Image: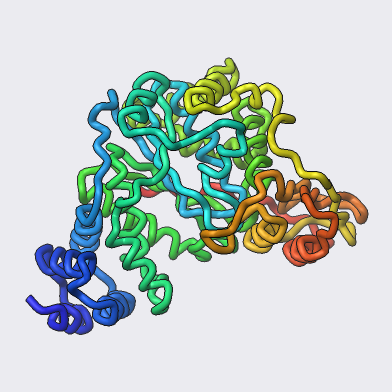
Length: 433
């Protein structure tokens, strides 16, 4: 078998076999196939696409290129959730304890963020003492005991994907749905869950800007998951504006606490109930979506969800008293209101620009070496569809520097205010399974 023949075959639009895909992924991972040939193959996929079967073979080959987490020691059906990312996406902080509170084991492997704000681990590390450096045995024991634990990503999970992504990033082949889908799903499958619920974002703050592209990506990932024997479904949700109100690490933890208390932003609350209900059904803890939703709503109302969060934090060394006293979270030195320059209705908020404003303040990483300021970020007071008066605060900036001019300019450029009333955007578009 020669790599040049496989490049030619894909270039001409033919389907590769399982053995051929295994050959090219193994060869690329161990250095026998050079970058330039893999770049040519990626470009051929970019233009010619892949069949449903090829996508499954590619994902399986990437899973097998490194470690696979064995979660068989955890009792019950393990359900994982993956979001394709966005701004103010606090769902994992709410979902993990909420779903665990009704008896569904949540064994979460998370990473650090590179972008607007930190990843789930960075956010949780806003809580004094919390750590994810635990052994696999401790991880499994904690999930069996408390139904929830979070561990850092293994160093050797899907090395083929890491190598291939780095190459795609510099060869203009990132925007290929087969390659995006296999990249995401290989990590989820290697992480060992029995079932996967995907939150695929669409809108200006999402990777998939159009609804049609989001549907195609969701369908591809669901087909891959089901094709390798993992029960997989996807929800397509809106990211045309930030989710919730808070963008920033400690600020998002506080918002997660509010949501678990039943006092969070309406959109974050609704999305968490939707995703959580599908996780509960996938774990076979409820007969249908409606029953699962009622279970989760009751868990919020009777305080079990919040109690689950406290137990989870304490078990991993965190100061669980922050749940009752969020003032113990890192706090910025300055809070600066950004007043509206005109009256009217909010027609648009560029999620991406708000994310950049938070990053300018220090809430995110521009490079892997960047140090995050856990206290800083922005809190929105006005969302799309809301009326606003000139002089009223659109956003409050939380900063450890007095000069926030750059962030303020970004925020003003993110908002568009019009005279006529505007409808609130659809939050959840469709479900794919």
